[in-house]
Image (cartoon, rainbow, N blue to C red):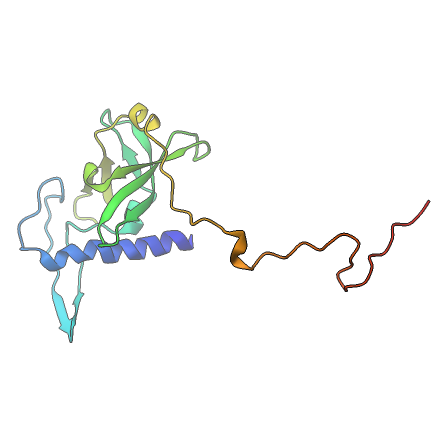
Length: 180
Protein backbone atom coordinates (compact mmCIF):
# COMPACT_ATOMS: atom_id res chain seq x y z
CA UNK A 1 0.00 0.00 0.00
CA UNK A 2 2.87 2.35 0.85
CA UNK A 3 4.38 1.68 -2.59
CA UNK A 4 1.15 2.76 -4.28
CA UNK A 5 0.94 5.91 -2.16
CA UNK A 6 4.52 6.90 -2.97
CA UNK A 7 4.01 6.12 -6.64
CA UNK A 8 0.85 8.23 -6.71
CA UNK A 9 2.63 11.13 -4.99
CA UNK A 10 5.57 10.90 -7.40
CA UNK A 11 3.20 10.77 -10.36
CA UNK A 12 1.35 13.85 -9.14
CA UNK A 13 4.63 15.76 -9.08
CA UNK A 14 5.66 14.38 -12.48
CA UNK A 15 2.37 15.15 -14.16
CA UNK A 16 2.42 18.67 -12.75
CA UNK A 17 5.87 19.36 -14.23
CA UNK A 18 4.70 19.86 -17.85
CA UNK A 19 2.29 22.54 -16.62
CA UNK A 20 5.26 24.86 -16.10
CA UNK A 21 5.93 24.93 -19.82
CA UNK A 22 2.35 24.99 -21.09
CA UNK A 23 1.41 27.73 -23.50
CA UNK A 24 -2.27 27.72 -22.65
CA UNK A 25 -3.29 25.84 -25.80
CA UNK A 26 -6.75 24.29 -25.53
CA UNK A 27 -6.99 20.61 -24.64
CA UNK A 28 -7.95 18.13 -27.33
CA UNK A 29 -11.15 16.13 -27.14
CA UNK A 30 -9.22 13.02 -26.14
CA UNK A 31 -7.69 14.86 -23.20
CA UNK A 32 -10.75 16.50 -21.71
CA UNK A 33 -14.49 16.46 -21.56
CA UNK A 34 -16.71 19.30 -22.70
CA UNK A 35 -16.08 21.13 -19.42
CA UNK A 36 -12.95 23.19 -19.01
CA UNK A 37 -11.14 24.37 -15.95
CA UNK A 38 -9.20 27.60 -15.74
CA UNK A 39 -5.45 27.13 -16.02
CA UNK A 40 -3.69 26.36 -12.76
CA UNK A 41 -1.89 29.40 -11.43
CA UNK A 42 1.68 29.29 -10.21
CA UNK A 43 3.43 31.09 -7.41
CA UNK A 44 7.11 31.92 -7.25
CA UNK A 45 8.93 31.67 -3.96
CA UNK A 46 12.59 32.46 -4.38
CA UNK A 47 13.95 29.97 -6.91
CA UNK A 48 10.99 27.57 -6.60
CA UNK A 49 7.74 27.65 -8.54
CA UNK A 50 4.71 25.91 -7.05
CA UNK A 51 1.48 24.86 -8.71
CA UNK A 52 -1.75 25.88 -7.08
CA UNK A 53 -4.10 23.61 -8.99
CA UNK A 54 -4.48 20.68 -11.36
CA UNK A 55 -4.96 21.23 -15.09
CA UNK A 56 -7.84 19.50 -16.86
CA UNK A 57 -5.21 17.62 -18.90
CA UNK A 58 -3.35 16.36 -15.80
CA UNK A 59 -4.01 12.93 -14.29
CA UNK A 60 -3.60 11.90 -10.68
CA UNK A 61 -1.65 8.71 -10.08
CA UNK A 62 -4.18 7.60 -7.47
CA UNK A 63 -6.88 7.67 -10.15
CA UNK A 64 -4.78 5.76 -12.71
CA UNK A 65 -3.50 2.95 -10.49
CA UNK A 66 -6.22 0.33 -10.19
CA UNK A 67 -8.21 1.64 -13.17
CA UNK A 68 -9.48 -0.88 -15.72
CA UNK A 69 -7.94 -0.77 -19.20
CA UNK A 70 -10.02 -1.63 -22.28
CA UNK A 71 -8.74 -2.91 -25.62
CA UNK A 72 -9.57 -2.01 -29.19
CA UNK A 73 -12.58 -4.34 -29.09
CA UNK A 74 -13.90 -2.58 -25.93
CA UNK A 75 -13.18 -5.70 -23.85
CA UNK A 76 -11.53 -5.36 -20.45
CA UNK A 77 -7.81 -6.17 -20.72
CA UNK A 78 -6.65 -5.70 -17.14
CA UNK A 79 -5.85 -3.08 -14.52
CA UNK A 80 -3.13 -0.47 -14.14
CA UNK A 81 -0.76 -1.95 -11.54
CA UNK A 82 1.99 0.65 -11.56
CA UNK A 83 3.64 3.54 -13.37
CA UNK A 84 7.25 3.71 -14.55
CA UNK A 85 8.75 7.17 -14.16
CA UNK A 86 11.90 8.30 -15.99
CA UNK A 87 14.63 10.28 -14.27
CA UNK A 88 13.51 13.38 -16.19
CA UNK A 89 10.08 13.15 -14.54
CA UNK A 90 8.09 11.80 -17.47
CA UNK A 91 5.85 8.76 -17.25
CA UNK A 92 7.59 6.19 -19.45
CA UNK A 93 5.07 3.38 -19.19
CA UNK A 94 1.97 2.09 -17.52
CA UNK A 95 2.28 -1.43 -16.13
CA UNK A 96 -0.92 -3.36 -16.80
CA UNK A 97 -1.78 -6.68 -15.15
CA UNK A 98 -3.04 -8.87 -18.01
CA UNK A 99 -4.72 -12.27 -17.90
CA UNK A 100 -5.40 -14.39 -14.89
CA UNK A 101 -8.49 -14.40 -12.73
CA UNK A 102 -8.94 -11.82 -9.99
CA UNK A 103 -5.25 -10.96 -10.22
CA UNK A 104 -4.07 -14.56 -9.80
CA UNK A 105 -2.00 -15.80 -12.71
CA UNK A 106 -1.77 -12.40 -14.35
CA UNK A 107 1.43 -10.99 -15.80
CA UNK A 108 2.68 -7.42 -15.99
CA UNK A 109 3.00 -5.79 -19.40
CA UNK A 110 4.42 -2.28 -19.79
CA UNK A 111 2.67 -0.08 -22.33
CA UNK A 112 4.11 3.33 -23.25
CA UNK A 113 2.02 6.05 -21.61
CA UNK A 114 1.40 7.80 -24.93
CA UNK A 115 -0.36 4.65 -26.22
CA UNK A 116 -3.15 5.12 -23.67
CA UNK A 117 -6.25 7.17 -24.31
CA UNK A 118 -7.54 8.40 -20.95
CA UNK A 119 -10.87 10.20 -20.83
CA UNK A 120 -12.49 11.96 -17.91
CA UNK A 121 -16.13 11.71 -16.87
CA UNK A 122 -17.96 14.98 -17.61
CA UNK A 123 -17.62 17.53 -14.79
CA UNK A 124 -15.62 15.10 -12.69
CA UNK A 125 -12.07 14.31 -11.63
CA UNK A 126 -12.84 10.62 -12.15
CA UNK A 127 -11.53 8.64 -15.11
CA UNK A 128 -14.26 7.59 -17.49
CA UNK A 129 -12.25 5.09 -19.50
CA UNK A 130 -8.71 4.06 -20.37
CA UNK A 131 -8.33 2.43 -23.77
CA UNK A 132 -5.41 1.10 -25.80
CA UNK A 133 -5.18 0.04 -29.43
CA UNK A 134 -4.06 -3.46 -28.40
CA UNK A 135 -6.29 -6.49 -27.99
CA UNK A 136 -6.23 -8.72 -24.93
CA UNK A 137 -4.51 -11.47 -26.92
CA UNK A 138 -1.80 -9.07 -28.12
CA UNK A 139 -1.03 -8.08 -24.55
CA UNK A 140 -1.14 -11.68 -23.31
CA UNK A 141 1.51 -12.49 -25.95
CA UNK A 142 3.59 -9.39 -25.14
CA UNK A 143 6.77 -9.84 -23.12
CA UNK A 144 6.42 -9.83 -19.34
CA UNK A 145 7.68 -6.62 -17.76
CA UNK A 146 10.41 -7.09 -15.15
CA UNK A 147 10.82 -4.50 -12.41
CA UNK A 148 14.38 -3.49 -11.56
CA UNK A 149 15.71 -5.50 -8.64
CA UNK A 150 19.27 -4.79 -7.51
CA UNK A 151 21.48 -7.84 -7.21
CA UNK A 152 21.88 -9.05 -3.66
CA UNK A 153 25.49 -9.77 -2.86
CA UNK A 154 26.67 -12.17 -0.16
CA UNK A 155 29.68 -9.92 0.47
CA UNK A 156 27.72 -7.15 2.16
CA UNK A 157 28.73 -8.36 5.60
CA UNK A 158 25.16 -8.75 6.74
CA UNK A 159 25.10 -12.54 6.46
CA UNK A 160 25.77 -14.59 9.57
CA UNK A 161 28.93 -16.63 9.07
CA UNK A 162 28.57 -20.38 9.32
CA UNK A 163 29.85 -21.96 12.52
CA UNK A 164 32.20 -24.89 12.11
CA UNK A 165 30.66 -28.15 13.28
CA UNK A 166 31.39 -29.15 16.83
CA UNK A 167 31.58 -25.52 18.09
CA UNK A 168 28.76 -24.16 20.25
CA UNK A 169 27.49 -20.59 19.91
CA UNK A 170 29.35 -19.78 23.16
CA UNK A 171 32.68 -20.84 21.67
CA UNK A 172 33.18 -24.10 23.57
CA UNK A 173 32.70 -27.64 22.35
CA UNK A 174 29.20 -28.49 21.21
CA UNK A 175 27.22 -30.78 23.48
CA UNK A 176 27.24 -34.31 22.26
CA UNK A 177 24.08 -36.04 21.17
CA UNK A 178 22.48 -38.23 23.83
CA UNK A 179 23.54 -41.82 23.50
CA UNK A 180 20.97 -44.62 23.49
